[in-house]
Length: 175
Image (spheres, one colour):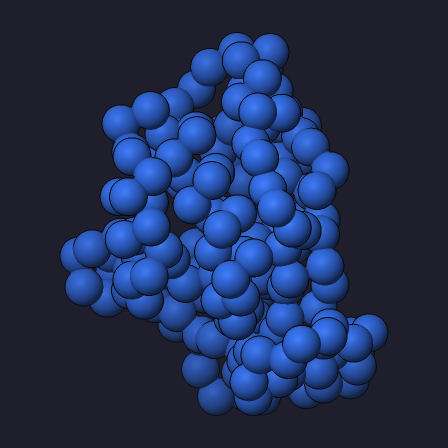
């Protein structure tokens, strides 16, 4: 399998207009959060789109939804907080329904072809062998290998090739 290399990440929102690095940094720094987001692994998910080919789905914790609403309404000037709240509750993608929604996931592989049979078994085996733990339901505490709390927000110029993303960071902020 020839997949595009990139750092595993969770996409919080997309469609961000290209601005100067200083303006993106100002926007990230202005986002107010009451708590750091709780990231908890739910299941391996195989999508149909290049961008969601192999992911680990993340539970929609209230802290993660709050982060997504704050980010979307801050970085997309035409989106209100109410619109961002409506979006964050939708559990769909354009490939599935033609509508935007928030399905938080840790991207593992971008790939153009279908992922079937032996590849799926191999991915599942690799994830299990790594010690990553999936949680059936959202838990109060995040234990080691079930996810994490906090993280880093990064705005990346995704108009470039996936291989160039690591050198295309426009702004970042520790949560």
